[in-house]
Image (tube, rainbow, N blue to C red; front, side, top):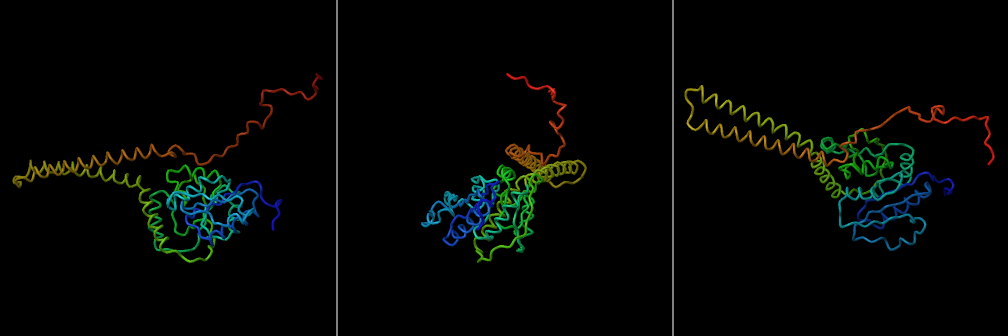
Length: 329
C-alpha cells in the first residue's frame, strides 16, 4: 500500500457519480474507487448523486476511513441524467473534477486521469471505439447546437477547475459538461480508453439518446431562427415581386380573367406581410437570446505576453546604496 508521504498533496480531487439509483454492487465499486483515490491523493472527495427516495446503504458506517470523504446527495425525484451531472459538477470543490459512471472504468484509470488533468491545462474526455449508426446525425445536430457530439464518448471526463468554472457558466452547461463546446476557449482533448465489460441497458441508452437528440434540436434554436429570418426576407421579396407582376399583367395584358388581379394582389400582400412579421419575430427572439447569453462578451481565448514589470530594479523609484549601513536606533 502506498504510504501517506507518497500520496500527492498538491491537488484536491473530486470524483462524481451522478448515478440516480445505486445498487449494492455499484456501491461496492464506489468503495473500491475511494480506496484507489485515497492511495494516490491526500485530499479527495467522492460525490454520489442519488434520487430522493434512495437512502444510503445500511452498511456505510462499516467502511469507516475508506469512505470518510463521501458526500451522498439526494435530489428531487428523477431530475434527468444531464442535470444530475451539472449538479455534481457544481457541488464539487476539487481542483480536478472527474465526472464518471459507476463501474465504467477501472479505479486505476480514474487515478491516472486525475493525474493528467492536474498536470495539464486541458479537459480530458474519454472515448472508446464503439461505433453506431446514429453517429453522423447526432454529430450534425451537435454542430448546429455548437457542441462536438460523438456517441464514442464515454460518461467519464476530467476537468481542471478553471475550465470547469467556464463550463458551468455556459448557457447550456448540462450539455457542455457532457460534450465539448465547439469553442476555442475550451481546451479539450479526447483520450482513448477501454471500458469495463458490462451488460448493456439498451432501453435506458436508447431513451437517453432520444432525449439528447431533442436537447440538441432545442439548443440549435439560434441557427434555426437565423434560417427562418433569411427565409422570411425571401418570402417578403417574393410577395413584392408577385405584386409587381400582377400589376404589370393587369396593365399590359388585353384579357385578364375576372377576379384574378384582386386575388393575386391579396395573396402577394398577405405573403409579404406574413414574411415581414415572421422576420421581425425571429430577429427579436435572436436579440433576446443574445442579451441573455452570459458568455456573449467573453471573447478572450488566451493571452501570451513578455511583460516583466519588476525585472529591472533600476526602473523602480528607489535608490539603494549598498555602502551605507543602517544607523542604530
